[in-house]
Image 1 (cartoon, rainbow, N blue to C red):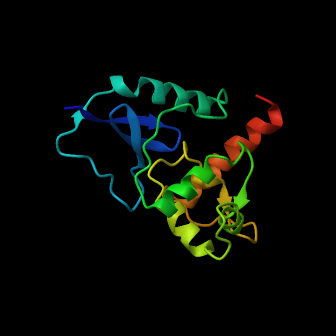
Image 2: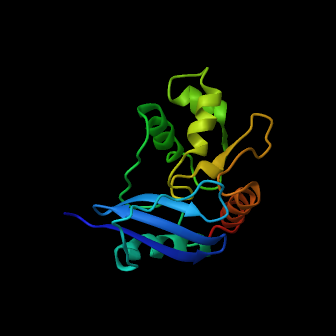
Image 3: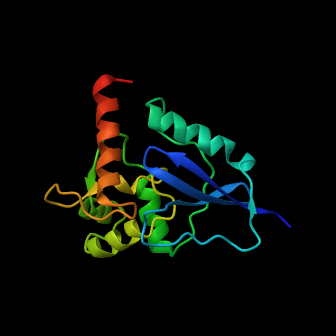
Length: 164
């Protein structure tokens, strides 16, 4: 039987709880989120399997990484997975709208459903749901809180300006 792992790390946004199954990242949860991370009772607390994830997150937060190269397992409905895969295509340091994501996945009337899928993203930061904003340019919804959404967008904008 393949082990399921979990670990907790510190980040500039606060503690992050992560889970991994069969070598694929399955969850990143910011503790201030209202949703509670689901840690399988049989999971093993071990930092080791997360070395690659931790290294890439550290590089991202310090300005040395713009894209993640981590095996992911996105558990959700086919619609949610299509939204999350589209989120991964949003370039670093840019934003798009919920409506634009709906158009890109071929379902332009599904703006609210895109918002719901965005809010249920199990792997924020790495699947960059923070890059999606309201059609009027305002920050809207983020499981880790709007303050952290703003911090992530500011971090990416600063890195884009400095060319780091």
